[in-house]
Amino acid sequence: MADIIRCPVLPYKRSQRVGDLVREEVADIIMYRLKDPRIGFVTVTGADMSDDLKNARIFVSILKPEERDQTLQILNDAKPFIRSALGKRLKMKFIPHVEFRLDTSIEYGSKIDSLLKKIKTEDESS
Image (tube, rainbow, N blue to C red):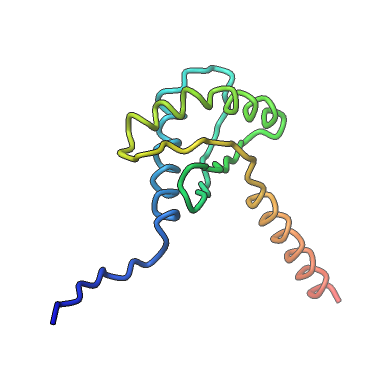
């Protein structure tokens, strides 16, 4: 009988692993290769890859609220440059198309935190 060769079970899907790698590389490209002085303080918080690895939705957090729209527009205008830089760094058959989205989870978390603090102070005062 032929021996059955089993692959080790990986903790998460390939699209998630590639998404983590794309997130790191895009953050590095924005920080060190994108030389646009209009870009404010940007943090790449996540990357969602499609299962076929051809599309990447990159989530960014921008420090100053008044710079969000402009910075997001600059990043979306720089998509061809970022994609070509990704192509030089990643050894993949297809380089994913990137799309930048604003990550609102930090704002949502701070809103929840402030509501919890408000509830706690109201309970202590009564």
